[in-house]
Amino acid sequence: MVTKELLGKVIIQENIDTVNANNIAKTFVINVPDPYKSYYSRFTDVEKPTSIIFVTKQPNSFEKILRVTQKINKDNNIAIEGAKCEVKIGSRKLPGIRVKGISRYPEIQTIQQYYKNAGFEFAKDETFKNTDSLIRINRFFNVEELELGIYKSNSEDNVYYTEIPKFITWDEFREFTFDIKNNVKDRSYDIAKGIFYTNNGIVEMLRIVKPKATIDFLKTIQNKYIEKLQ
Image (cartoon, rainbow, N blue to C red; front, side, top):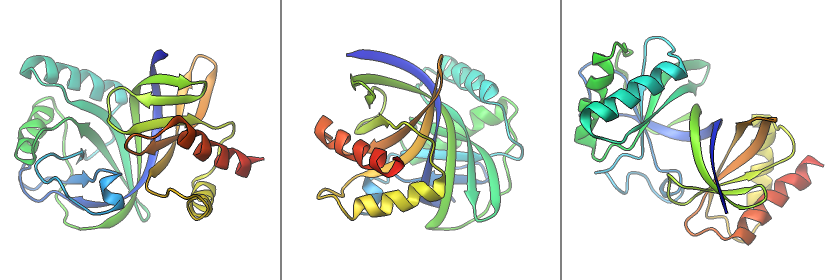
């Protein structure tokens, strides 16, 4: 098995909520629920946020976010993961910093203050619940190749990736996903689309979240999408 460090992007569709406590006053913070838990229920583990987005006034470069996050981790002996993201709600596009690795909700304000101290400016607060969104995240992936074109995340539990041969639009992805989920026995998984950047160019991929997913299951889902692309 081969371990790879890859740069890429993932696009997910989630119903999101604002964080209205434990953040810097009058700033815009979003909670993104665990994709697998949200398949059944919401906020089953209120003590440990899965993914938090600090909405910023202006877009910031991926490089700046990585540099600042690296310094925050070093200076405070923590291990958070910062990434550039964009949240689309209807026609609105909100720039932000996606942060993973925060241990408890009360720690959100502390982490946010670190970014503020580094010069990031946050958007004015808003409040909403269970709002449909499309989230694009630029990030690094640490993966282990289980078989050719099939990977397991080394940094996130229950997360897998499978390569597909062609680009699909978001509308095509939604259409394919709806049809595939209605024609497989096991529907208890979450799926998103994305890309890996490699030396040979862009590799299209699917991100699958499912506890203890087998290679056979991952291949089944992969092949269902490949069939749609033919």
